[in-house]
Structure formats: structure tokens, C-alpha cells
Image (tube, rainbow, N blue to C red; front, side):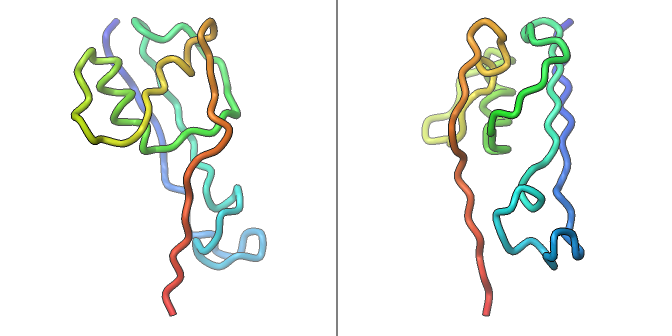
Amino acid sequence: RSTLVIATSDHGFALGEGGSWGKNGLLELQTRVPLILRHPGALRSHGARSAAPVELLDLVPTILDLAAHERPVGWEGTSLRRRLDPVEATSRIAVLGDVATIC
């Protein structure tokens, strides 16, 4: 009852999908990755889906929050715990992204 399971992955190389070659933009195809969280003792969302934007930067704060540990001062990210609770669900409207171009 206390095991947190997280499944995620990279978004691949975009080898021609959507006319793109490589990860050189902020299109949904180039930025969206799957994120599945399961914690039977702390999350009440049980199979719920959300289209709300989150960042992988939020994973460590979420893990620490669900494990009842303090987050070190200065660490970035926000725990997803409240966003996963159907009663308290909140959502951010945007996430931070950048594209580096090497010439």
C-alpha cells in the first residue's frame, strides 16, 4: 500500500514525423511524453486521465511529497500530489520550455 510507481519515457527523435527531423521545436509531438503515477495509499484519482500540463521537473518534488520528506531549499518543480487529487485538483496553464539551436 505504500509503493509509488512512476512510468514515463523520452519523446523520441522525431525522424520525419510532422515534417520534423530531430528535436528542434516545441510542437506537441516533440514535447509530450507519457506520465503514469500510481500510489494506492496517497492518490485517490484511480485511473483518471488529465490533459493538464506538467513538467518532468515536478517528479522529484512529487516523490518527496508522497514519501513525506522535505524538499531541499532551492530545488525547482512543484509536487503533483494536489493536481492528482480529484477533490483538490488544480492545474497550471503553461510549462517552461526552450529550444537550443547550435550553428
